Every structure is written in C-alpha cells, then in structure tokens.
Image (cartoon, rainbow, N blue to C red; front, side, top):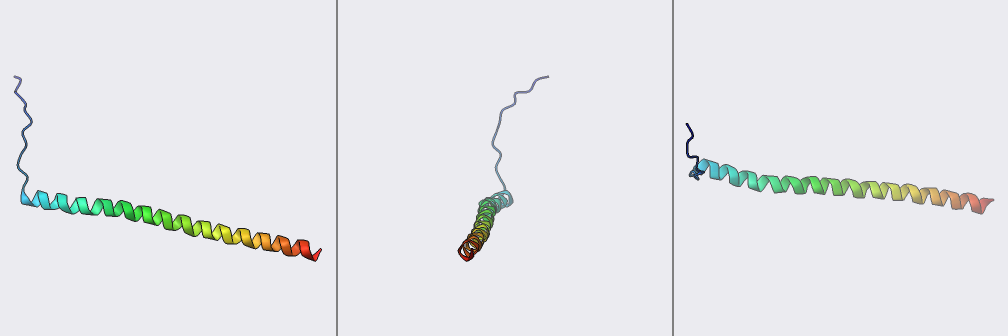
Length: 67
C-alpha cells in the first residue's frame, strides 16, 4: 500500500530552538578559533625562519669580510 507522503513542518519545541541557537553561536566561533590558531602558527614559523636566514646571512658576511 502506497501512502501519500507529504512533508509537513512540525513545530519545534522551545528546547530544540534553544539547542539550535546555542550550536549556531558555537560553530562559527570554533571556525574562527581554528583560523586564528593557523594564522598564529604561520606567523610564528615565518618569524623563526626569518631570524634563521638573517643569522646565516650575518655569519656569511662576517666570514667574507674576515678573509
């Protein structure tokens, strides 16, 4: 037997509305937190590599000027 399946909207309960509201607020914040962590890590790594490069260049200049 085939039933007529119509999609009816059911009323959400106050608890469901509160849960949706809570999750809607948390999820975008988490994404930004992950983005901020990635950006911080990237900038720290870039600064570390820059310091290493400057140290190598200074060492090379000191070696070439002492020869």
